[in-house]
Length: 166
Image (cartoon, rainbow, N blue to C red; front, side, top):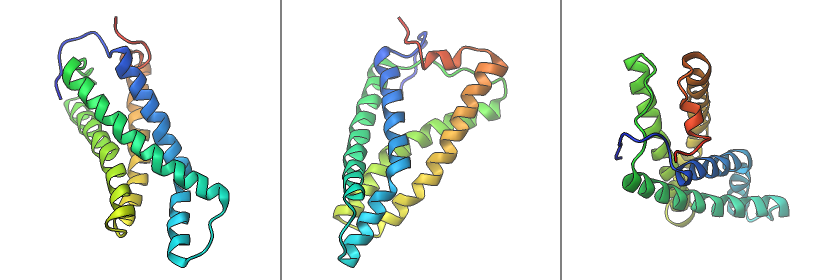
């Protein structure tokens, strides 16, 4: 990932961040319907219409996340990103860097393992499901880190994800 000394994220980067975040929350909240659909298919039973709709939405939202993350990475490679704000503690800075990489790994890996579970290797569905608690913990740490920067360090990090650079 390229990093340049720029003042903040572009409006496209900010928009992609929040759209992808909203889609991930949708997946975390309504993703269980896909598990129900998989179990119903295995048993040969009918699926409740609401669960069928949500399972279909889970599939398509996962594909949308994959496409948007690919676009987000391309925008980052072309336009760069601001240097990360230091927390003042090198170990926390390294953990934050690792957490951002883990986000990208999950944002690509979850849709890919989900698609592979549907079309190629059903057993991957179990690995796919393990991503949910990892995502939840990572999101919690990400939010705590943002709040730490905002209210303890008061360094404007959170503002960069709400107000695009000019």
